Image (cartoon, rainbow, N blue to C red):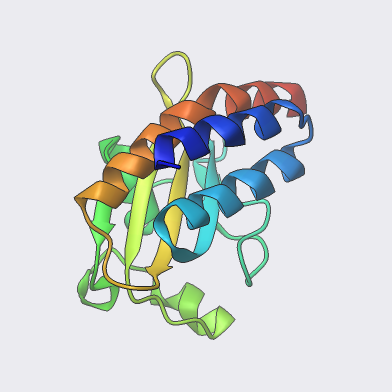
Amino acid sequence: MNKFNQIADFGKELASLDSMDNIIDLIGAEAKRLVGAERCSIFIVDNDANMLWTKLSDGIGRIVIGIDSGIVGDTYLKKEPQIVNNPYEDERFLPSIDKKSGYITRNMLTVPIFNSAREVMGVIQLLNKTRSDFDASDLDTITFFANYISGSLELVLLNEK
């Protein structure tokens, strides 16, 4: 089965969920599976507080950063996906999060999630592709995936308010 058929099957499962925690967990698990990543965080935009936050991140709990902080913040500001295969060599990288968790980030893919008004409402961050570095194919897959899940995420965020 190709990745796009896998995403379509995933959509049926996603449509059956209604709580933010369950939807974010399912989105994260599917994103990791699609590209073979070890970890996934879904950052939600809070424009009122100028923050990006996660409900839970694989292995670290909740993360809260400034809207312009790190590679995730840069993805939000530029409204475009990014591949960073040497994060410790990138001045935008926030090594303090690795230090806090004891995790070592080897590579990263970040993709904005747009709402129906084409504003960034979140960012998918995938860490540590297991077999190689992230590449253009991974970027295409997760960009398609972000567009696919955006409606469900937007609805659950509106319901949470």
